[in-house]
Structures are given as structure tokens and as C-alpha cells.
Length: 122
Image (tube, rainbow, N blue to C red; front, side, top):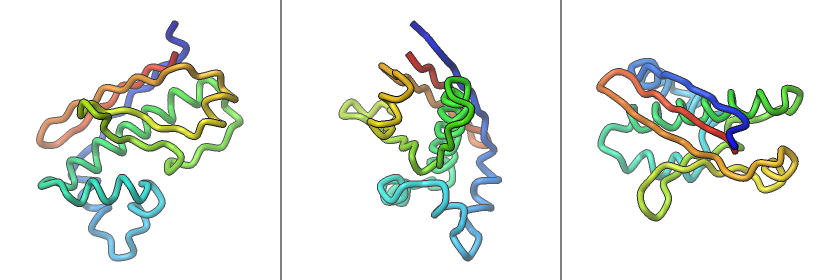
């Protein structure tokens, strides 16, 4: 049963601009080390980071409808590919249990300028 959904659209050019900031604040405060390592291997890093960011934001929105008072750091939401190369969301087990989450489904799509993500929580 679907308990919550979240959707986000992200401007790839804006992510590219944020990634070019000298202090790396956006990257270091938004993405896990694993996500950064994987993203840096991609030809179009801005597009890859934009898809991660849209996925994190969509997940955050879906989680927020389940528990509005629970503080969530975007680095606690990890977007990686599974063994079939499909995107998936990794959350801490304690968060999954505390919110009684069974599954998190994610879909990512992009064009040259935008990335969209949709997340469904069961």
C-alpha cells in the first residue's frame, strides 16, 4: 500500500553552478562519500548529481509527510544503483523501522536541462 509520495524537478545548470563553488559546501553537505565517488566517474557529472539531488529531495518530501517533526539530513538519504543498475534509495535501518517503511520505490528521468524524480513509500 502506498503511504506517501514525493516528486522533485531539478535544473541541471543550477546544480552545475553549485558544484563549481570553491568551498564544495553544496557537495559536502548534500551527498554521501559513496555518491560523490560514483558521480565523479560519470561523463556528465552535473546531470548525475542533479539526478541524485532530485531523488533526495523527492525522498525527503515523501518522508516529511510521514513524520514532520523528524529532522532529516540529505546525507542520510543515499541514492545508488542496485545490481540491475536501477536507482534505489538507501536509508538508515533505524529510520526505516521508526517510520514503519517496507519499501521505497524511485524513478529518475532527465533531459539535457532538467531531472525529475518520483518516490513512493510503502
